[in-house]
Image (tube, rainbow, N blue to C red; front, side, top):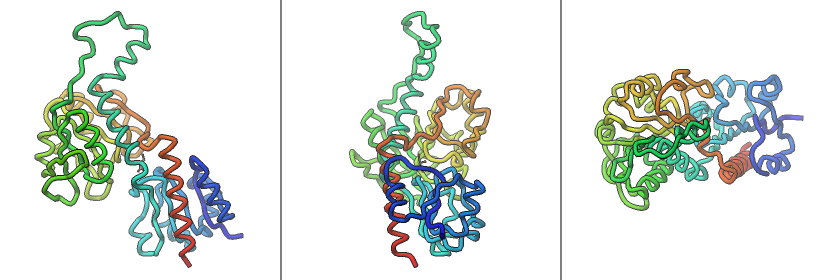
Length: 311
Ligand code: DGY
């Protein structure tokens, strides 16, 4: 019996089982396990997650492949050009994770500026001796500029949230466009990267990882941020030069870093664990039940459509 769909993981909600009922040759096998490797040559579709880095060699090993579905909006782990040249559809999960990801970026921003993690640790360690006028002072955000890298749906959703807290959103996008960005609640200027960086008390990354954005925030770019700026990354670790950011945290030049993503994750640069004023999360951007169910549904619907129309 030929293998129709090869999935590396069960998904949240009923979508994958329903897809399996429609295409009864659905197989579950961990990425690059012997079972996955053995099933690949006959696979008509793959279901992967963002940590499953597929290569051109995988496409060569899967001549039957018609579609790849990834449970993510990001497609940086897929050989997209190779898929295009072979007529393999790529199905990702945009839009349904916009609010969840923007919510998590906001959570990181408030956790850092109000020193939530340190306060929680103080109480939990039973070391809190009582209220003091200068205890765990954070910084206010109202009236300050919030630089946003990317003016796609997640960048706009984060802009609305920061604006609701009194911040002033500024944008940069990969196309280098000028003019204003209408983020729904108001408008904010699109600036050259160097100007945006020099004005951003908070910088939040919301662009995809591409060859253009890899290490976009290098040492020189990060040095343009005002002293004490807060950096938030819920996009992809590779956009940031992590060692440069850690150096700036160590010297106090950078006021804090809230990270949900890491270059080479789940391996984490061990220096992050020693860096001051950091909040480190395990890639939770889209991690709500509702969002993951919606992502699974979108992915499975897209695969079913691609398989139904392919040869
Ligand atoms: C994505 O879907 O690409 C996000 O990183 C998930 O959190």
